[in-house]
Image (cartoon, rainbow, N blue to C red; front, side, top):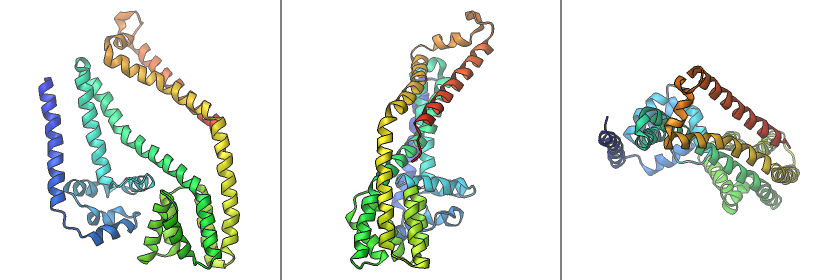
Length: 326
């Protein structure tokens, strides 16, 4: 297969996907009200609601197949936690495009060992979107936890001023910065369309898997059932969360060098191997060639497995040392 044919096939696939997406978007007739209400539907049953959430032909084809498994709900929760405006089918389509694009790129960079290079590019394209989603989740969760104590102070002041719990939550959605304002704005909107308070709080906790937020949700639910002074409870929780954030920050500073060293030392062999493969594949091929002086190619395979095991175990040990619970 020549270089021109590879470029033509890849370009044709991308062109077909763009045409399908453009045509399906033009033919979309779902109203704005349905689109807004669809954001607050229960995402625990993707099989029952899949056909109501499609707005393109590509997502319709993928959602019918995703709905048959339990991975659809899990992926939807992961995207919600990362605050990515993608549907499950669109996320899978992104993975397919990344795999095809990076496989083609790997083949073009090193056509001499094209299929192995394409396989390397496909593996990177498969895991790159997942890594990006996890990264977005961690950053957003960290920002949310850092704003939680200020949110509780604002909510306590509102309750002491005579606000009800929904009014205090609405004040938080107006006054606080993102991302906490976005999540509480969605919580208030769910309450406005008739979702019970307990269910709306559970949805919030599902989108933001924070231990500190779990304390707040539990306190609000218990107060609604048995009564009590919610402002004093939240004030105590706010002090506890503020101290936990402070201690976590100090621990993070002290263990930053360990975490950075573990990450860098683990990634250097990976990037160095990839660079050597695309620059000089013969150098790595000799490692598995029996004529290069090794007893047999199996020795090279065993050595690679041992190296990977040592890198992974070293990384896990260093991250375990730096992981101090508060």
